[in-house]
Image (cartoon, rainbow, N blue to C red):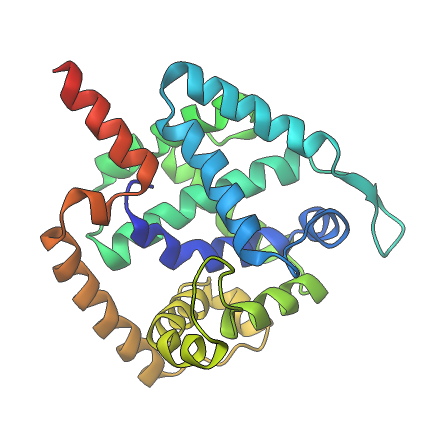
Length: 261
């Protein structure tokens, strides 16, 4: 999660999360994702990046903040089922979507990882999960077990629902960020390339079985277009200075490390 290009899989991860019925109920009843999508995205990214790049004390504080935030997320869903965001299954599932999303992002927009590198990534993300309270027994022990778990979860646990459809709509037609001083017309025109890439990545990188189940159209032409964009991103990002290609927390962590070397 060092690079801004992780945002290319943010929509995919969000869709996978809200396809879980408990996460969907919590988002529908406790989130302002429809009225303040950019604010919610900013808060979510800052919390998770704080866990990863905040140093020991910062990571502990960010993890505690994340759990405290989710303590209030509970209620009864549309089908009369009681839920709580800290239930082990949905709490781990949200973490799992981030683990899988990072691997997919690297494969498509940087380079595929070797088997040993995937094991190392997974071990690191298990530690991240511990920092914000995911129990060891809820996390598969290694990458192979995680892949089996993830694929089976997608096949048997995820649902289509109103929140999934709302998220798909908001990703296809994102509102102008409140901090961006542009007229609405200029935003709609200027954002088209980024929205196009984001839409392709969101739909094209979903597990094919889920995409088919949800009736999301994906053609050979779409796949070739996504591959072309991915090729440009792979070549362009290494040419950027660190302060532009790294997220702010990752850049700050690099600066701290350089100072102490």
